[in-house]
Image (cartoon, rainbow, N blue to C red):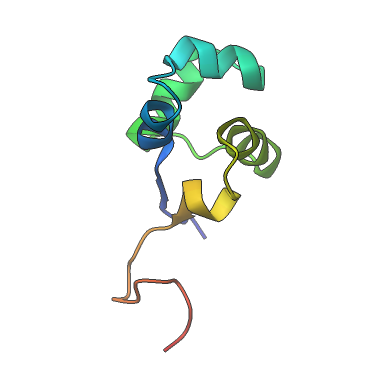
Length: 79
């Protein structure tokens, strides 16, 4: 099953002093192009990478990444 993941990476970068994509990429050990792809939603990060990104922001992974709302549920929990 191919799940759509919504992310708040760009918003968190700006909340962290307007961190650049390059700065985030270096801190989590990937290329800038990977960060661009994640922000655009064209690439879903591995669990390990999602955890590293959240750690850089001092946030919970679920505050940075979540399943896209496909069935009208806002929190991803069954009704």
